[in-house]
Length: 168
Image 1 (cartoon, rainbow, N blue to C red):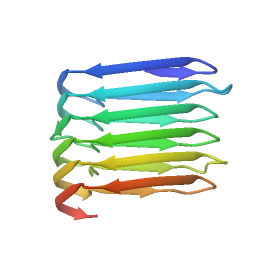
Image 2: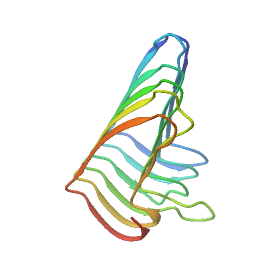
Image 3: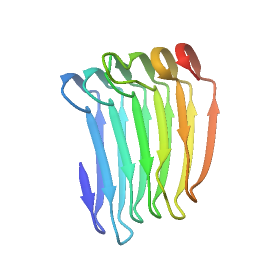
């Protein structure tokens, strides 16, 4: 799903099985320039053997985006499990709860279970809740935060179990 300008886009993926994909299973990008909004919900789904991140959610250029990722099983990705990014005045609200993420980052790509990053952002903001997830056997960090520019981020991380990763 790609949204531009002042579009309002809501996407719901629930009770789905997605397997053997060349790229991301779910790719949600909002690059609105006039206060565009969007919401992505991925719940109770099974995602296996993706060529990229299982779920990617990005906000740019003044967009306000909400992402709810709850109760999924993500197994054997070549990239990250869940990947969130923002730039340029965007606001992103992320909730990642009760997911099971084993065996991430197989092949030539490195895999972080839950990755959050901001580019050279101007006044971007992020609100993040990561709770009740189980991560096992990924090739990079279980949780990865890379915040730069003038981004302001508020993150609550609690009650997660992370084992057998290269870094945390």
